[in-house]
Amino acid sequence: MPDRFTRPPFNSYDGKTDPMEHVSHYIQMMSLHTHNNVLMCKVFLSSLGPITLRWFNGLRKDSIHSFAELIQEFGARFVTCRRVPQPMDVLLSMKMRVGETLRSYASRFWELYNEIGGGNEKIAASTFRMGLLKDSRLRESLTKKPP
Image (cartoon, rainbow, N blue to C red; front, side):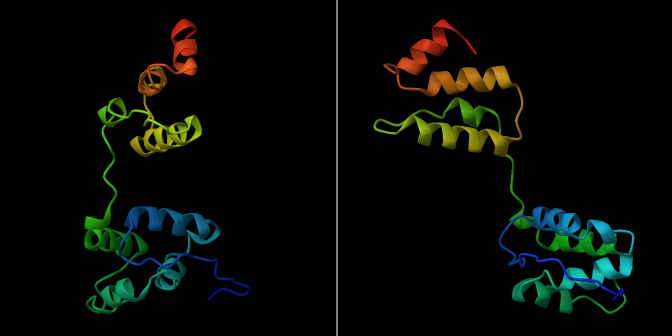
């Protein structure tokens, strides 16, 4: 380990969430050391939980030669945990529930919109408006004066 190296705080990967999100977080936390291939590999182990550490310990000796290979193998092993982006039409079916607050509806809507990865903001705004309850004053206002 380099002098004065302090291991950044990582969330342990449990094998149940998107592995590429974990790798992205890891690389971000290690951004000052990405040029050091050996360090990236060694410290990556400390970001693994018990299940994923068992996977690592089961790798054949000398089968990994770089951090890129390690990440490729890691992603391939835990590919079933990858988050599949939702299609844009999922937004079209989202409606405000009877009795739901505007805040709750807006939170659900924009959270889903961000999971989709954005896209056409005009379509999103229109879909948001159409999902509001028919007698909503906000819906009436947005219909008269589009954002």
